[in-house]
Length: 513
Image 1: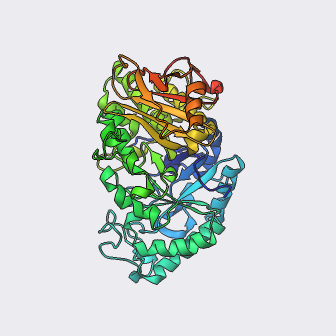
Image 2: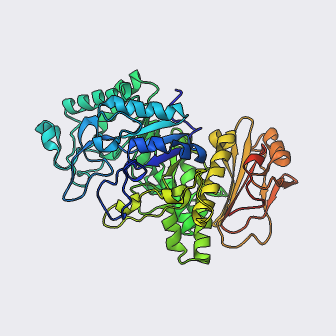
């Protein structure tokens, strides 16, 4: 299990073509051609990723794709025409052999693992690329789709997994990527479009023989009312994890767009009839997730409406004060991402405030990474204020999470939830962290008082909270009087108190929004 993704990890998602390559072109985001990012280019930038602190790289598919489609090239590599070799356009010869054999990807995995980074490979079993039907037997395809969601995905040729030849092909193909491509962690694309029969065979054959393999499913249901539809993939189809899109929606709705925290995130538990927030569906004994701590949490990705910084800019426009608020809100969202339960995933460029919007298609969501702002020390140059401030904040949060058992593994206990404020504990065996969010625009006029309920908390945890917690940046002790935590939090700010000293990552005194 050494290279399997787990709760210790921070995942960094890369659209390979838009990241870096020896011959990569700098072009307008509206250009739908291949820009030249490669697997070799990712290897070239591993030191940047290590300095940021991420532990795992997730890369988009590497299959051989169709040549082009009416002037638009498959820069995202989700339009395969062969599942049995790499696309030569993803190799530039600087670090990897230019052979398209699956074993070349194994060399990429080895290069990443040699520097302590795990790899997640994006895999596709649902569809082929446009016009690629003639590469496969004609009876391998559905007309209209057969997954949980009816209809072909964007008109792509849809594989029929009720045909035993199709399922057998993909099971053997995945095994080849595991054995020759050294794949341990799989992000499975468009899961809800795949017939459920396939997951029965997958968990029996692949998971049975390759018990170290980890399956993360992309099931694009975004609303809190969709959680019950998501549950079956973890609870019944035996996925190790799924992406927590409902939490993504909740964080965006509350922290960016100012909707009620108690409606979206967690109820205050004052009575049994309160509507549930997303985090209230974590309990497996109340028809919740089998293990919510294994969910992959996120703020944005390559398919959603816009990047998180663009959400913040849509709310807070203009330069000066508008930009200041957008930066503050983006940092608040990142603070929540790295302190709530789950395995956090960053989309490339989020750490420097990269923007992107979905319009007629997804190309602007997949802008080129801005390497011109990164200095020789692997940090954004100080003259790029937005990029530098968000990067340093993100890097500090990653280091905090990596050093905190409570934030990686801890049980979550809500202390307070109302329209504007959310306070919660993360409790591990020998560690505890207290997190409080003020989602209002003004500082709290008087300190909030959070009772430490000894019906929920063991005495040793109460004692740790009362005597050992300090602010993660300022090292200011947490004020506790008469078993009540007393806190006053600035507007649009997350404050984190933890047990162990975080002096090594303190960059500035006081609270930071």
